[in-house]
Length: 600
Image (cartoon, rainbow, N blue to C red; front, side, top):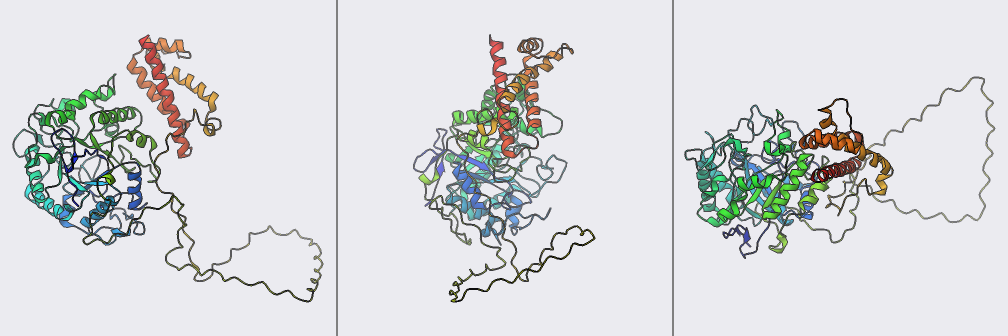
């Protein structure tokens, strides 16, 4: 049964029956580059990750690809040729064995369908790699920010889109395509061969000619590039793919206007912290950050729904949620919820060096703070709109997926597959009772006389050699499945299991709060008098008057961050998270106290 989305012109995305659908999606990278596989499948099975996303009410996946591999359709590698590490565990996801690149994407899409997850096919790059001087050597590397190049002309790209339509158009949960990731080298409404608006219209109409039910996601432009008609130029600091200003006067016009979806990308301070030079946009350093961000977002892309009548789904946004980036994440989630924007969060992967992921480095432990924050966004259950059945069957052999009927614990794993398990021992009947009593045991021989020489030191007994043909040891059981976050994580300030025995205790925490309150203003006061060190709240107020609010805020954040890192060094991961929560509460309380004094 076909599943079709459309945009009726009121800024919403709806099903064919008229029901509004809210996209709460995620990016999961790896397939767009030379790795040619979703990262993480070497640790856990594909179904486990999809179960995790569905349990946390994510209903869409932005599935990335490159045109070079779509065209060549190479075999799926079991190992990454660069470091020879596994790209996936064939025992955990056996359906990927022997697949080609396109078949691998089909396996992901079809399995996602059975978990109620929609798929957006997104062209993340033309080539698998762009070697060149760059912070990220594989991408963007030497890429010029255009949607074509001298080898991959628009005509060749359209052939690839037609090829993808032949493979995926009948897959009910594949809802559409994202034409090009972050074409920041192009312009919008500038004319010429680098006008992304005209190129997107040509590509979009070409895709719709082969698959009329798909929606077409179109990103903005950026700098360095030509920018968009009506924007503020490079001084406006438009991120790659964020600049949709040109759509206010020159919107996208496709052969079917109900298939147009605008999809900007936007990030916070964390993405700039990883760049060389320590440069940070002015609006992230402003005194009123993050409350200054909403007018900027509205200017860059937020106007689209009201002005064009088309829906807006943010194709990439995310961050580390540390320091100022945490304030930014708070603000962007509130803004998306207020505007009813859809989103594809970046990302599931913990190996994103400038944003982190929804999972921590072990690919198992969730980032509970991010999940709880994203739970505020609206989402639509796909199971209420369409039966959760495999979306692709031709040429693929998919293992049946049956949800467990009850929350019973999983049975232990079988022995190592190279050897069959030994047969169970047969029960031995007890011997019949003897009519004669057993003879008494023989007397023990007398102990030998003591030696005049001290005995040599005892040696540990040698280990017996393993018997021939013995099976290897049974591997440890799989870690528990990924679980949705608890309602509220414990806190160092409130959890008796943590507060009394870990780090400080309550009395130590109170002393820490007094120290931080003074330390937060130390720099401001010291800048005027190097001999004064604030030790009381009166000193803090004096330091605040001598220094500036900006300096006090910045030093407070820096002091708390350094103290949190030192206090939690060497601790288990769970305790480290609790320490971070406690220090965040201290930081916020100090800020609130300072703001209250300023108002009074």
